[in-house]
Amino acid sequence: MNSIEEARHAANSACNLVVFSGAGLSAESGLATFRDKGEGLWSKYDPMELASVDGFDRDPELVLRWYEWRRQRHRSATPNAAHRAIARSGARNVTQNVDNLLERAGVVPEQISHLHGSIMSDRCHAECGWRCDIDLEECQVLRACPSCGARTRPSIVWFGESLPEDALTRAIEWCGEADCLLVVGTSGVVQPAASLVGMAKARGTVVIDVNPDANEHTGLADILVSATAANAIPEILSGIEKAPPK
Ligand code: OAD
Image (cartoon, rainbow, N blue to C red; front, side, top):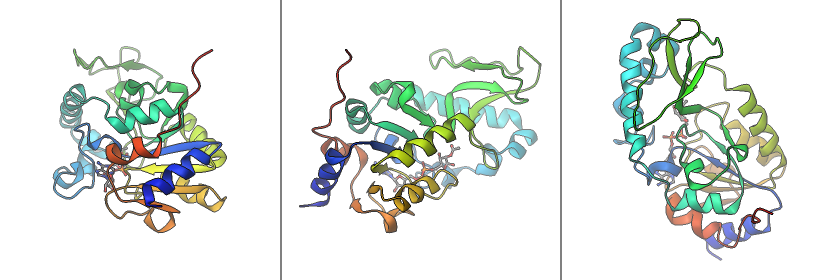
């Protein structure tokens, strides 16, 4: 058996398959990853300037304009074969991605935990509770919270911030229940997200790692698939179809 066949067998044998994804899942949709050499966003931009509270406090306009640019990129991105195969499988998803390509492929929101928030909405920086979905066609954003007057910002987790409690709770529960964890397109360097993979592995979950390059999860994976998401995931998930709605 080659590694894709092994992975397909493990995924098809699982009672509770969970997909754990990172930026590599959306790379073949045209969205840059963060740490790939040359093309990764963090090799061109300083995360402490653009993705931290200190950076935002220093120059909010710069940060907001950068996210507007990223939203333009998201507007032209469409789900790739991996997103579509994941949607067909009906598996639960724990994702670090802030895009909505899994949802657009057909995964229902109840089946996704967005650990790092969403680029598709803004919220009040002072956390008064105001939140607003962003229409990518219009992309018009308010600079001041209509509720309390504080600055608005993307609903994304920045460096040094805590993960959304509801998303983290769901992710811990789902990874804890999984008997097979399909890890795809993540470097595994950002905590606490990455620790969920080790946690699942420690309780006996079969870990499949789909990534063209070595990463922090390579050493603990039971099955390593050295391929891109759009090439490998449809094959691995073939044969797994969610039950049609009753
Ligand atoms: P990274 O950019 O750190 O890692 C992307 C991974 O995807 C690398 O291991 C690549 O080898 C792999 N990869 C690249 N192309 C691929 C493809 N076509 N198919 C499969 N894998 C591919 O991205 P993340 O691990 O998601 O935080 O980064 C974690 C967090 O760091 C992100 O959520 C982001 C960032 O700062 C926030 O936005 C809050």
